Length: 326
Image (cartoon, rainbow, N blue to C red; front, side, top):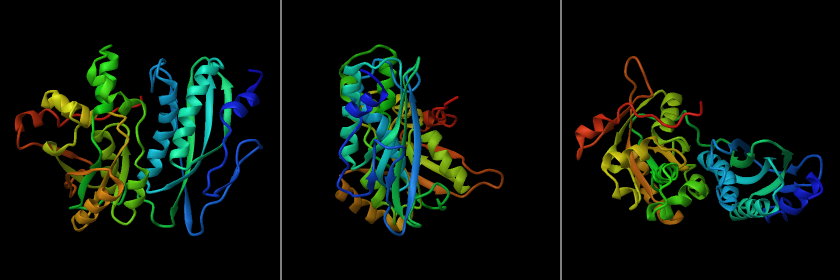
């Protein structure tokens, strides 16, 4: 391949989607896009580094899916509608077979969520690194933030928790069994909950996406909102595959494991029926797992983990935390 511009033209140029938001995409010094009247622009950036965030031999198509999905998940957590994204790609080599599969996974995900690639950068590097900046829009004043949880709110999560963490554990142990075959896609190509996030604009008080594990991420809401939480371990939603493991193993993956990219949100008790109706509309199951509680006199952002079925094992979870980047 002759140069950077040939690479971009061959693999990363697409026809704009029908939303009409993108006025000028790839091919000029900068892109132009329009957000709707009375909306706010929502922007998020994530980087994925080989050997740190994904295995070097990860299927490139799935890596293309995931690299955009993790950013779209951040937009979903704000209740935002995707518009466009930029891509920075640092490559050890311009491998055409890898680029073909990666770009197809990336652009297939972009098409699924009506999100245009509008620019970025490519460069050579000793290490494969992917950085995407995603842009969305939300009606003014309707973005769902982390600092607005209220005492007595229900705590909910979408989907199931822990499969991505279990898949990572199996891969690290070089266990390539039937369980890995079933759940591997949860790690390598997660599904951003865009529709659910948008539907929660008038329902949720606070929300974020679960990228670093329930224990770590929920604390961000609690710290920002200056509240505590009580979680019922018996209600944590797990897949049939994960439920084949011992209870403590299930909890460990569901609580401390990362890469779920499900939504965790708080909502008043009065909205339980609305959330049940939302599930029917989006097809994404929501599970009520706990309650926001008042801070103690000295500290907020404390999570209490409880189980009626296994109270002695619940004691072991009290100091569990999520994934840390450093």
